Length: 380
Image (cartoon, rainbow, N blue to C red; front, side, top):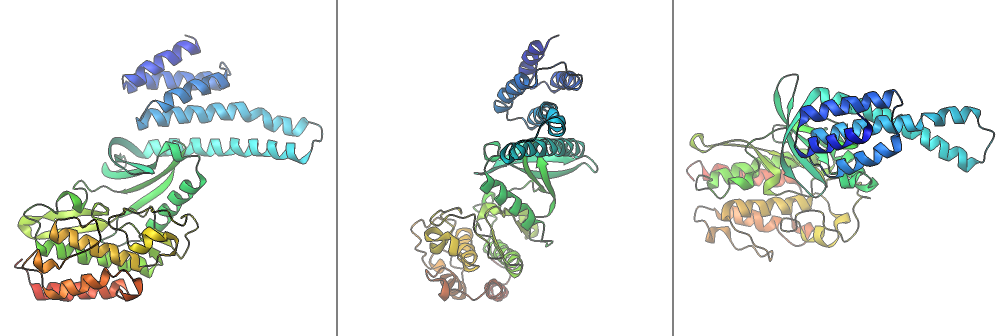
């Protein structure tokens, strides 16, 4: 069977989602590449076409592995050329050096693909954002379900987006806290970055907060746990900047047991240690409904008080079950008779348009919430 026939069969196998047949063809093409029975440039083009037309992570991974092998074979001659060619200008030497480094990276990436495939089996897509896609996967060593966030393919060539994703991985791995998402590892896969986290089947608080069982007590518990998580990251010099209901994952939700536990997730647009050169002035990266006025108007200058504002919006949503798109928040006591005046006072302070008038720290916010919760008791 020639290469053209193999490519045609591979296209059919991918279209039919036939992993067994595709695996057989990939294996044959790898053999062809190893034995020089192949036109690398032609096959790279054909594989790119198949890659761009599939969203299946298994096929994408196998295509990238074969592409990396082919690119390595195509560049191997550069090393010999470097040793035998006559002296050339600096520009030519630099171009040749770049080719050699590309070869080195392709082999590193290929090893990463093999390592990833040996550790995880990707099962199904469970979410997506502007720059990433999240899949449920199984960790093979212990059959544990995990969530894996992949950078979207269209951003692989964006240095800014790749750096932001790398920073998210670096930042999230700092924390070990019962109300912050647990991260196991990060690395490179399919030509882009990935982040392996705990899998939470229940999803975010946004999926349950409108249910009749979601009481004022649950709203307060959620708010206190979120405030505790935000206090921890602020102490480490990290500002989340995207606090919202869907970024508070349900670890436990048992209304009959009066039990709720959440974990803060998604550090994709966090600001760490004062660094924010990746945010263009005037751009709004966070979900606008939850973001503070200063984050909407001048996002590069925000500090921890933007998270205080966003948490207050979250609490309003949890208790009122409503949106207030104009940013004007009425007294919660008018919407829920069980809300004590002290909570309204605290939230109005958190929602002040001027950051300087908000609480001095997330610890102060959490302390206020804890005091109010004790006064409420467990009846509501």
